[in-house]
View 1 (cartoon, rainbow, N blue to C red):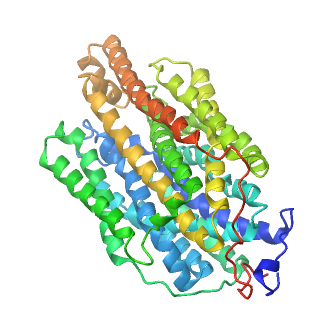
View 2 (cartoon, rainbow, N blue to C red; view 1 turned 180 degrees about the vertical axis):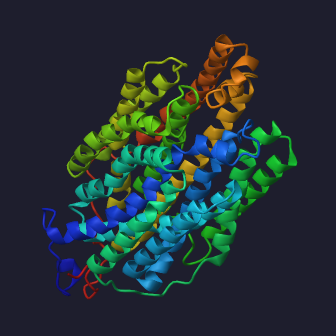
Length: 519
């Protein structure tokens, strides 16, 4: 691609080798970031035991769920910084720096000797991983041009397919043949490969360090969200919302977040450009994405834990049993990428959401003996729905933004997904923990899976069966919350574009501007 005027760039209709080379870098980085979420999901019951002071009293599920929440919160924290840092250092240099930070954080997680240490190192890991997706989306969007965005976004969706399929399987296998440490150590060689590949494949880009950094925005948003979720996650420990640890944390967090929203409209270059909400497509897409991600990812987190604690499956078996969700998405995501270049997303996304709604309501009926084939079918159905939902939402939001709005728009979308996932995981884990506490024998029955001496204390096999039935009911009750949230997603989805959107990607590119990519 020459250095002619950018407006004269003729993007080919087909996906050429040059773009595929860039896509390979982005996909590899995204796989590392997303895989590490799903790998850890299957390890949560293991963390409950290995980090407990008393093996007979495992840690609360809401406590170990912070290994997921802390990671996604760190992702959300660093995503808004990515656009400013990319302007200062360039996307290529920053992308390599993010991979190195993620790899170092992974190595430290493997060396953690306590749950607080692991949570702290997960934050460091997330600070690196959080930059990979928005940088990747910006690189891919600029490489694709307006007419290939749907197909290129489908390629970027590959990690979202591979993560749910291979993450739990890989995590379960590593835990079973080695130890939980290896779910983090596996990232070290991947990080080395990814950084070398990025250095060789990504083109040099033009940097324009013109924007000031919004330090006040960072000081308001990140601590505010963390404090609010910390208060929510403290509810099971205190047993009530009427405890200072709960309501003080939530109140301070809420005040900080509201102050952040007020502040964001004042500086010329805020941390998050909330002025983009004037774009109707972006606004509707973000509302839809938030509700969908909170319900879907929060609910999906429960499945491997259900298999291990209620059904007594190994970590590897649980990993295989949750893989159908990713397999379903693998079938529909490429199709959705093809259709979104030809049809309005308002005629695609609702069909995907209906599949998720049906699958999630099916999960509300599970018990301790639900057929694995039934569970497999429900997960597969939700996967089909997810594949037809997420990438079309991203695509419609970015398609109507101008060239100079893409980076900030992708930031808003990515931070919405990560914050929603954090909220969903925190809320679902709190609800599950409270539901389990309502049964005096549920937790003891779960503990008897690894300590047979507890069977006698429960009155024999019949007592264990009663406790496991109560535990399954706790999971099913939690899935009701997720199912109702997904159903609410249909409301904003009804306002997604039902007519062909006009692309504005090249509207504000100056005649003498440098090319988007040079090869």
